[in-house]
Image: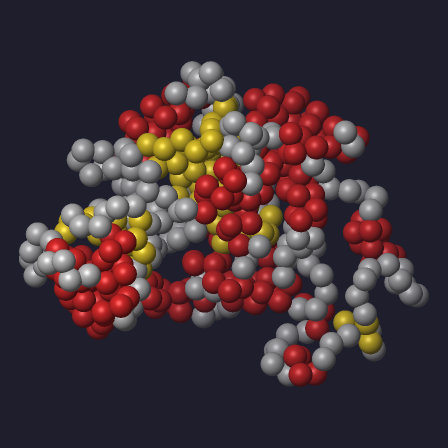
Length: 433
């Protein structure tokens, strides 16, 4: 094992042996080179006042070389802020500004020890880093039975972990914290579990309320007190899109420092929060450990990034940083939030109106981009009928669930959308599909 990796492992083991034992074999071996090309280039950038012949970019007239056909569309930005490589951990100022934003929006984090967010190539990449650093073959990844399908690819297919499912809702249509607790405690023999908490949930658009949030945290604490090491990951992809009486913060703050056997990890990003899906800018933040241990995890994370994508795209990081620092940012974001909330409320009004009889029920939703209908006919057959006869695209999940993304439908068109879904359901029931 590389001495740098061993040093990082020793730091973690000294400060919190439980956290050290959560690392995968790859996580234990990972480090960020200190004497490699990047470190030597950084030193040259500071001290090489005559010629800097270190890094693999081309320059011209003291600036990064570029084509005018590209720069003319980006004339508001200096070439140094878009063409050069970003550091593996991301633009330093962006990391600091995102941390400040996180603290402002999540008061429960204040006073907790957290790392500086590391920039990822959006949230999927952040989750992949979690898988690389913490998931080994046979480790348990605990998720609700209604979840984002990419979790299986990320943790099971790529890392060989075992997916452990529990019912998302209980008999009262509340978040099933008892089911989560049972699923965690069932990992006693393994001694470790990775739990993914995605609120608002994709696909049902549900965020627990404050009391349910306390129950979730209590379930994780119970598992830790039972001797199980918990990697607690908050997948906050749709953070901030809370339309009703629900948690308004990430559970990351409550999980930081919860127990010595709990490692809190927050994965979030500008992707959905700032409506920049194609920019691919996300963040991964660690919490609840000593400053030295957090720094060690940051080093392992940047080493992982260096070994896979080298660094994230510089232009989109610059765009996001400029937006976050703008005086217009919050007002414009509030405007988009109002549109999204209006669409969610319209959907709920339609579904509760009685217009569609008893042809379906729906899972509780109060946030995010999506909601799910529960059909008593085959969801895939309905999906196909919607495409062929009504020009409507939806997502079938299992035999009964149909996910509808109200986020991408104008409020004025939502009634027509659900009218078409209703007719497709009737068609299928009549055998006309």
